Image (cartoon, rainbow, N blue to C red):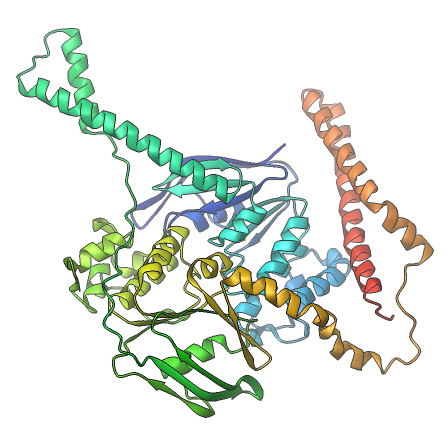
Length: 597
C-alpha cells in the first residue's frame, strides 16, 4: 500500500533549483535512504515530505490517517523543562502518561539516564539523542530522519540501528553513514542535479547499479560524440534544408549539439600537497587531563609515527575532542607534556566549523589561504582545487551565504588541506559531509604522506582510513591494532564480562529497598507475553484485508464508511498492542537480568 506520494515536486533556493519536477512514492514497510552531495536538496525533500516546508510546485499526497514522525537535523525543544517533559511534549496529552515508560526506556538505552535534567544543560550530542527518543515514541506509520547518526557516538549509533531494525513502519532517512544505509535500507534514492534516481536494494546494490548507470551513460556519450562528428562534417559541407530528410537531419544535429553531457566526478588528487615532515613528529609524555572533576586521560604516553593512521573512538564526553585540542595546543594537559617536531605543520579540522563571512565569495575564501598549491607535476590553482572538491565554476563565485551547511564544511575542509599540512587532526570530519566528499577525503588520506589522527563515529570511514584505534573509556586510553571492525571484535570480547556493569549504580540505590522480590511476570502478563506476537500479526492481517475491502468498495459510500470505521478500530487496537509489546519485552529483559521490583 502506498503511504505517501511526492508528485512533480520542484523547489528553488536562492536561484538554485534543488528539486526539478521529481516524483517519489513510499510503500508500507519501505526503508529508504536518501543520498547526494551537499546542497542537492536532501533535507529539503525530507522537510517537504514532513509538511515542514512547502514545495514551489507539485503535490504531496498522504494516505488518509497516516501518522508521520519527523526528526530534523537540529531537534526542536523548549528553552527549559526536564528532558522527559520535552521528549513527551509533542505527544497528544492523553498519550503522554501511557508513553512515559517507553520514553524512559529509550532514553536510558540511548545513554540519558538522568531524565529530570533541564533540557538546556544537554550537549549537542545529548540533544540529538533526546530528539531521536522523541521521534521514536510518536505513534507513527512513517519515520522521517535527517542525519540521525550525526553527533552521536558509535555505541549510540549501534543502539539506534537496533531500534530502527525493530520499527514496523516505513522509514525515510537522509544519512551519510554507509554502514547504517547498508544495514537498514532496502531502497536508495540519490538526488543528483535536481533529479531522483531510485535503486532497489542496499547501499552496496546501489553502488553496483550506479557504476553500471555511469558506464552506460559514458558508452552512450561516446556514440553521440562519434555521431556528432559525422553530422558536423555533413553540415560543414554546406547541407541544405530543402528536403524533409535534410530538415530532419539538421534537427538531429542541433539536438546532438545541445545534448546534456554526463558529468563525471573527478577524484581529488592532493597527494603531493603536504609539506616535508622530519623524523620528529608529536611526542606525548605522561599527559593527564581532568575536566569538571572527571578524568579524561591519565598518564598517557605515545610517539606518533610519520605515517600514523589513528582512529579515536569512545562515548560522548570521554575526552576525544579534548585530546585533539591538546595536540593542537588549544588547551594544555594538567600534567605531562606534548612536544612537536620542528617541521610539523598541523592541519586541524575542528568539530565547530570556523566562522565564515557570509558575504565573501567561495573562491575568495580559498584564496585567503593560497592562490596555488605546488605539486611535482606543476601548480594547481585555487579554482582547480575547488573543482576537484565539487565546487563548479558557478558555485565558486557564489557568496558563502548561499551554501548549505554541508557545503560550508566541505569548503572548510579544503581550506585546511590547502595549507599543505603534514599532520592532520580531524575531529568528526564526517559530520554533515556527503558520501561523495567522504570518498574524496578517503582517497586523499590513502595517499597522504603524513600522519593522520581522526575522531569519528563513522564506522565505514574508520575501516577505510585507520590501522590503529585509540579507545577513550573512563579516563584510560587503550590502543588496539587494526581498523574499526578489528577493534569492535576485540572490544566485544574484552567487555563481555562488563555487560551488567552499568547496573552498579542501580544496585546501590536498590540496597535501600531491603527485601524486594525479583521481578517476574504475573500469570496474566506471562500469557499475554506468549501470545502478543501472534495477536499483532493477526491484527496486521485484518488491517490488510480491510484495506483490500476498502479498495474493492470505493464507490459504495455506506460500505466504505463501515469498512473505514472497522480499519480505524483495528489500527487503534494494534497501537495499544504495540505499546504492550514494548512494555512486556522490556520487562522480559529486566527479568532476565535478575532485577528486583
